[in-house]
Length: 69
Length: 141
Image (cartoon, rainbow over all chains, first blue to last red; front, side, top):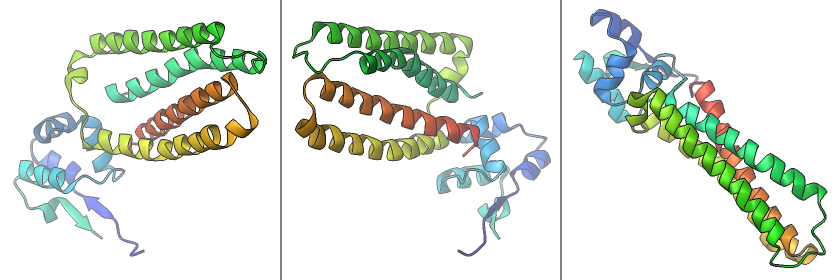
């Protein structure tokens, strides 16, 4: 085990994008509000496709949303 | 609580209401001497299955009427992941039950005992399936 895990900045990026709600973000990438909440808390690791979609909504690169540390 | 989690709890509730009384009755009623077909057992099972279907149908309609927008949303990737994980575990329960009922019990039991054991293992696998899904939703997994 590497001891590393996936971290994300979704909460911060939502704030920086006009306090976008979890539901709004979920609607834009085709998942429920609960799934966005689970991703934010690190309880659920999204698929690569969903991760790219989230980064695309915020207009940033994947590595600015998710980090492996 | 998300719509799909409510469906999972509804499914568990329907199984409990329909099959706890059925298997309780089966457990306390001797059937070893009764051959096949056994109309009384068939009617009892039909009632239990009917109750389960009615609760599921009525419950789904009621939940969909309460939150029509949520009901229209298809299962997303997390819903599907939860479902896959639950099915993976319940598959092993079903396989163990199949071995017990189909391979071992024919040498030690007969008739409705085997039928009811098979039904019990199917219901048990369903309970495991929905229980794991419910726990996963609670943990936000």
